Structures are given as C-alpha cells and as structure tokens.
Amino acid sequence: MGLKCSSCQDNDYDIDFETPSNNEKSEKSNQNPQSIHKCKKEQESFNNIFKTKLPEFGEYFKGDFNKLIPERIRNMITENIIDSTRYTLSTRRTFESPPIEFKNGNIYKGNWNEECEMEGEGIYYLRNENALAEGIWEKGELIGGRIFLPNNDIYEGEIQNSIFNGNGKLICNDGTIYEGNFINGEKNGNFKIFFNDGSKYFGGYYNENLNGEGEFFWNNGFYYKGNFSNGKLEGKGILKNEKSKSEYNGFFSNNNFEGEGIFKWNNGTFYKGYYHLSKRNGKGFYKENNGISFNGNWSEGKTNGLGEFNDGNKIYKCFWRKGEPVEVPSMETTMSISRKISAEDLNDLFFIPLDEDIDISQLKFLNRDDFDGNFEPNDNISTSTL
Image 1: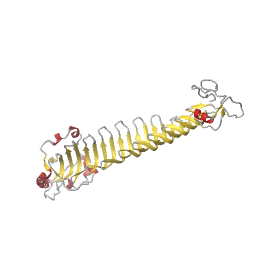
Image 2: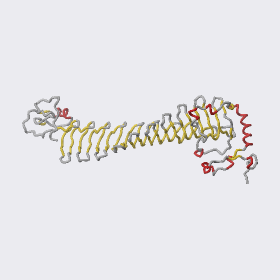
Image 3: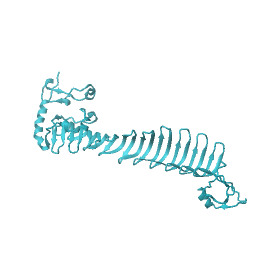
Image 4: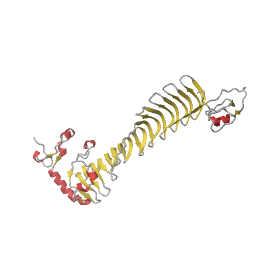
C-alpha cells in the first residue's frame, strides 16, 4: 500500500522519493520518508513565492555556474558536499532553485526554505574575493562544510556566524594541516598538526602557536613530549632521538637544556646534573658504561673545578680546568719553597677557589718543562699523575 503526500494527496504514482545508495541506507533508515519526499505542488508553490521576492536580493544567474568557478576550486568540489550526518539538520522542507546572483555579485546554487532563506545543501561563490563555501546551510547561514579561501587554504568543519567555530580541519596552501577546535576563526585548544616536511605535533595550540602540553615528532627521528611556550620547548620534558636511542629527561628553556636533567646514551653511559644553554654546567655526575666516572663541577660542557675522577680502579680527587685535569702537589707548609703564589693568583690561573698559599716548586707542565719560577704563555699544568 502506497503512502500519501499531505500536500498533493496522491499515491506513490505522484510521489518522488530519493532512492538512497547502499552506503546511505543505514544512515537514512531512521528518517521519516516524508522528509525526503519531493512534492511537485509544494515546489510549484515555492517557485511562485520565490519569484516575487527575488528582486529584493538579486536575480537568476544567466551564465554557466560551473564554468564561473575557478578551476582550482572546481576540481575539488564533489557532488556529496559533506557528510550531513555530522550536523543537526532542520526538519523544514527545502526547495530547489536555479543559481541566484545577489546584488553584491555573489552567486548561490542550492536549496532554500519556505522563507526564501538558504537552507540544506548549497554552494556560495564570493566572486570578488575569489572564494567559495559549500556545505550545509540553515536560515541563510553556513553551519558546516568547506570554505575555499583566496590564499588557496581550505577549511572543512563546523561553522558559526560565517567563521570557523567548532571542530574542523584547515589545509594550508603549503601542505600543512591543522585538525582541532576553532573559536571565532582562531585555532584554540588541542590540535593535530601535520607539517609539510613530515613532522607532526599533537597538543595544545593557543595564540597561533604551540602552547601547553604536547608531543612533537620531527622527520629526522627526534621526539619530544612535554611543555611548550610560544612554539619553543619550555619547562619539563623528554627529548629522544629514536635513531640513536639517546634521550634527555629534564628541564628546558628557549629550546635549550636548562637546569636539572638526565642525559642517557644508548650504550648505558649517562650524565645526571645541571645544564645551561644545553651544556653541562654546575654540579653533575657522569658515568660511562665501562665504570669510568666523574663527579664534580662543570662549566660550558667541560669538567671545571673540584671533582672526583674514577678510572674504574682508583678515585682521584683533583682540580680540572676546561676539561683537563690539573696536578696540584700536596700542601706541606713546613717545607722550603722557591716561590709562593697567593690564593687569588691561583684562582685566576686554575679557575678554582683556594684558601691558602701552596708549594709550587714541584709543578710540571704539559710541554714537559720544569717550573723555572715564571709562568709562560705555553705552560699548561701537568696531568702526569692521571
């Protein structure tokens, strides 16, 4: 037994139902068949009303709408504009109309409601801006779809008040893709960003930059998980090199290791201590996988100052200068000395703090010269005991 249309009161013979494809049947199975009915009498009634209101906002477009749209956009427009199941659609009937050219030169091709407002699926071409919006309309406003921008960027997703609002995806003309939450046209919230060089970022994005907790995957195998501030590594985080399997776990500032952290190499060697501008600086403990270690002070990435060196068999307590161990003889205040150097002089020479004068008569230098009473430019303190 056939259904009847409330407007035309005809049986199936005059009722034109849309026939959903196999893929659409499951989505439309719960819809009322009347909602997809195309009533000829209602369409004719709408046409008459529409003609009377048409002069208020424009006229029928006389050209070829498809040829009017730039080729770069035309090639990307599809018959199935967008998945309408993502949006809450109005239950009002919609009606078809030929393309309309508005008084401002813009053109709309799509469906209308009984109040002659754009509603349902439609395409709106902004001729002067050379931009296009396609998608789902309600009461004259685009609520979801795709927008082709003049700079060749493409936005797809939820729209409110004619701007990006809600979940969406922005495909930039350089190939970078942003997926996440938009507020009043701005990227604001958690985002997935796929860069055109293969790198990617998952995390907070505010004020048009990486901000908050996030994960960054570089295309060269590096990986970072932690805090970002204005696009830079800032605060607590972990930086890994997936290729070499080395990693740093600690604090960052302005993309540098800064403060306390642990650096581990893939062979078991590690450093635990303080950094400044990504170099070991301050107190720190370094140990290799063969047992050799150093525990002491560092400056600009090198051992500097007082520290303990363990060669795996014996521990040496000594002073270091710019990564080189310094031999200092034992202090014997009662022995005869040829010369004494004040603690202030030694501090300038060794960059280490000393509190008393010491015997330097036994000092030797890396050039194998004996101390002759004068320090020469080529003299470097000997490391023979190590």
